[in-house]
Length: 340
Image (cartoon, rainbow, N blue to C red; front, side, top):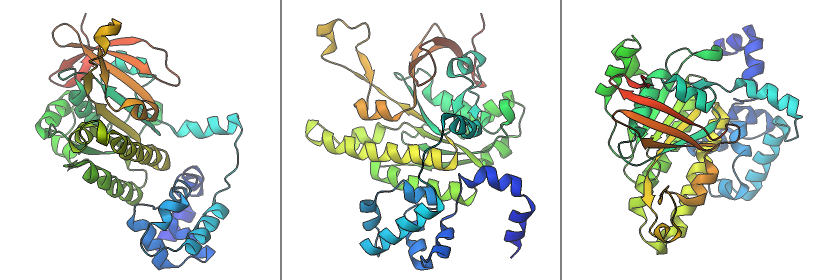
């Protein structure tokens, strides 16, 4: 009973978060039984919005849900969310909940319009040694610090596909920001993914975790998103299947980021384009993942190596930022500003 009282005491907070987290248990009031709600939770659907984001076909594949039940669930969910339109002004008010996480370099932040944005997928790609993993590690620390625009800081989930996560690296970065080592490490949840299927399954766990500790997690990092897909699917014959699986995963990521208002940061590898030598492109290398990944990422950043420890970030694709460049440095304390 106590939980209900907590909610009543603070109605202001409820309003703001209400559109984000409408718990799936609300369906009980609309005649959906607890067993069915449990089944939905088992596949990582924990909010009403989550039902809206899942097709009827996918729901019918959940063990124990018949078509009639799925229709009933969809109907109940639609009663709870008006699937209507908003004016651009109303939507801009809603967008005020979006926060930015600093990268540790002011130049880089300026390039991104404040940092890594929530409710969006930000993808950084580059060759090896261009600072992708260093950026991931720096974000693990900066996401915990209170920042601009009333950002309160929060926890991070790190999914590692290439075995490049180093907790000691976080300690060095924590020193730079003068924060306690153990506290920083405690706030990062780490998982190593071994296959592309495992990577997808981890997202169910991620969704459950975000739901369980609503509003506490602020960032999900996947370093690197494509590595396992590259290994599990080989050759042209399996390309179509790979891209479908990839599309499902990215769609899941986008939905998680919007459903729970978290930032998603993924890194990506490059490939040499063997046909490019014929067309005299300046740079024959391009990010892998093809058009599917290109369309799914909200903002894409290309990283390349500069002199010494300097790296250059360029906006490759973004809905609101112009295509500029920024120079940053990789320091002992993570990503920082380039010293002139």
